[in-house]
Length: 269
Ligand code: NI
Image 1 (spheres, rainbow, N blue to C red):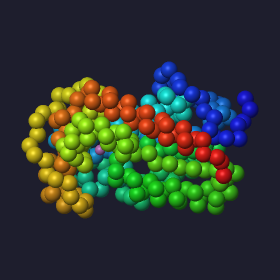
Image 2: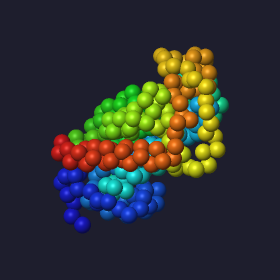
Image 3: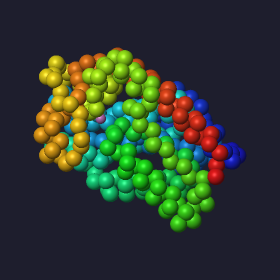
């Protein structure tokens, strides 16, 4: 197979997600993939409370599901999910497991550098948690510096992009249509809907909930719990259904697959 000069070349849609899961590939298969595509998708989530009825793994489950569907549609490899994120403000609730910002920065930097070393030049992070955004951007900035300092042959071609599925205009529009201002800002019905679609056992937790505490500034874990006693920020996750979840997956995957295609087509440095 002849190497292409542009990272735009990619394998195209595949029938199942099995074909694009890095976990299930051998190293010779990854080598062969790199001869035709320099793109890779990294799902990034969080393991944190999602209100009294939402799963602790919501952000990791949703990010991975969107990533696998984007991978299936584009043929771009998907790495295992980074299931732990920056969730310091959720530590007042049982089950939350958080990385400090400096730790997450180091983790994302090291993952990008591992991929860049093998020749990946387009690292597309599909994120499910707002608290990861600032730190992940900082990790990208640090990785560019490291790639240059280490003299990687592809240092000037390395590009990283953060894609927050819940901030895609199409996903925001669907949430507004279905839930209005009951979407809220944390433990939202849109993200809970996707988890219901993925994991039917979560339906058993769904029940009507009292009026949520409104969204407000975010400080430390004790302050968060005082302001948001049941963990929700202005949201009504009881409105979520599995059928809605299928629609959110569809619109998010469509928007991000198109965004990924544009990212892959950006000319190399
Ligand atoms: Ni979430």
